Structures are given as C-alpha cells and as structure tokens.
Image (tube, rainbow, N blue to C red; front, side, top):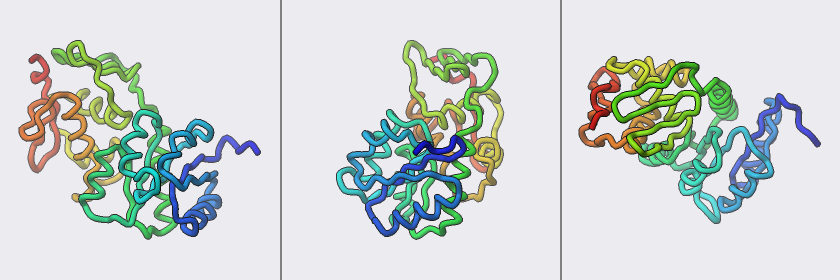
Length: 237
C-alpha cells in the first residue's frame, strides 16, 4: 500500500523484537511509517528498496555492529542517523558521533523524547542545505555552495551535509570567533548546554579532512572559552 507523502519513513535497525514492536507502534501514532531490520549486515540492501528518511540504529547487532554500519552508511545514505544503545558512556557516544551519527540516545529512552529527537533531525534535514551565495575562496581552498564541492588545491574533499553546513558557517564569517551557542542555535536550533559534543566532534572531522592539525589547529582554531574561528590566511600553504 502506498504511504501518504506526508508520512516520514523510518528504518529501525533493532534485533530486540519486543522493543522494536513497541517503537513501531508508538511511531505509527506520530505520522511515521516504520520498517524493521534485525541484522546489521542486511541494512544496505534494505536501503535500496525502502529509501528511509531517517535511520534509528542499535549498536549491538548480529552480522555487523552499529558502529561499523554507521561508518559504512556515509557512502550510501544522506539522511540523519540516530544511534540508540544501552552503551551510555561518554566514550561510546563520542565514538558514534565521530563515525557519522547525527544524534545518540541511551536506552531505555522515553518514547516522547525519542519522537522529539526524530522530529528535530527531520526538521534539520528538510532545511535548504545549499546556501544561495557565491563561491568562497581562501588560498588553495575553494567552497562551492551550489554543488557543495570542496577543493583543496588539486584535491576534492568529500564532506557530509552536516560537515559542509559547519564549514560554510565558519568560512562565511572568516576571521570572526563564533561561539558554540551561536553555532548550536544556527545549525541545530537548540541551546548549547555546556556538555553536548556534537559540534566539537564535527569540527574534529572537518579538521582531519581539511589537513588541519588536531593537536594545534591553525585553520579552524579553537578560541578557548569563546568558540571557533576560521583563519582565512591559513589556506595558502
């Protein structure tokens, strides 16, 4: 049966049948169509036939664990990924975000909170992700907002949508310190609570891809106690 266009398509990757059924039943009451995949190693095939808007991904899965799958999904899926796991340490959450997840919730999670997290990710996904502006050039770095193409010298740099959004925000205000609060409000539409690491992790991934130093970054600088600064003079070498 064809689903209404307004219905969000959710792919739930969860091997706990009882929990999966509870989540499916609850999400159905919030205008979401859910299909369940119980193995990590069959998800990529499922993407072809289902084409979900968002993936809810458990970590402890048969076939392929959620961390490994999250890393692979970057090449096949451009929508948001929400990790759900009983693994609740800071290290686990940071690892998941570094591997490309957009959010991370620790199980058990209240159903209403889960829906709120899903809706927040879907709202962000629906926003225009190609700024209507001219290209930005800084020495060897070229940023084309229309094609989301990044070139550093003769090399094309592949970024996720979220990484591109952060780079564009920083580069379009080059030389200015942008506070974490400003970045969180602009990109995520939430307040920075002083603990969330999403933007820190995204910045770390950007630095790696753009040849910046992780220990002493000079292209995307951390201004302690204030925020981040895109250094326009650092792209000549």
